Image (cartoon, rainbow, N blue to C red; front, side):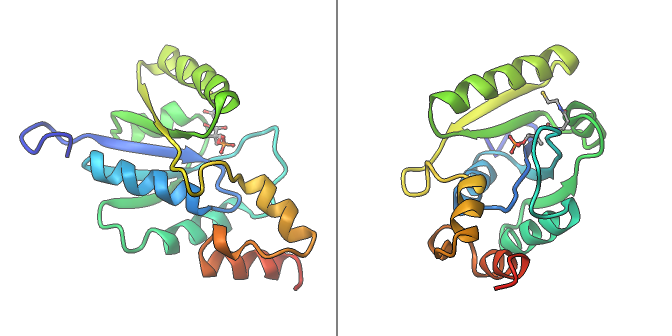
Length: 165
Ligand code: PNS
């Protein structure tokens, strides 16, 4: 989509998405406007404890992106670079909210490029939901506050169900 005459560019938007937020959806939607196709790749960061299992996160994302015609969702088994090769993806897209995100993403982008040659494109987070994170929303919901402005209705219901509310 970068240029209607150029070869299709398939992008991968990887993340934990525990759960997917309106900030993630903004990045996915903007990536889908730039690239021919976007695969949202649900991964595991071994340093994190998750609220939702990977297949639960995948279902919530699939519901959230159902209206985006050139977006699909898949699970990362193993390394992200191997996922990209298996899906013939040309580029990784990630959102950055602030400086510490950039430091983290720079490390991952350089490592992934060294591993396979794949390039990473960083998109600045949108203003409205730019600084929210899944971990903060989990914490807020755990303490009984309303996270509905920051997630879809389905995600809000799923979080409340996890917390037996
Ligand atoms: O939302 P997150 O936690 O920043 O997502 C991190 C994720 C899942 C994209 C990353 O941990 C990942 O790519 N995991 C797959 C395994 C892998 O390739 N690790 C090396 C990445 S440098």
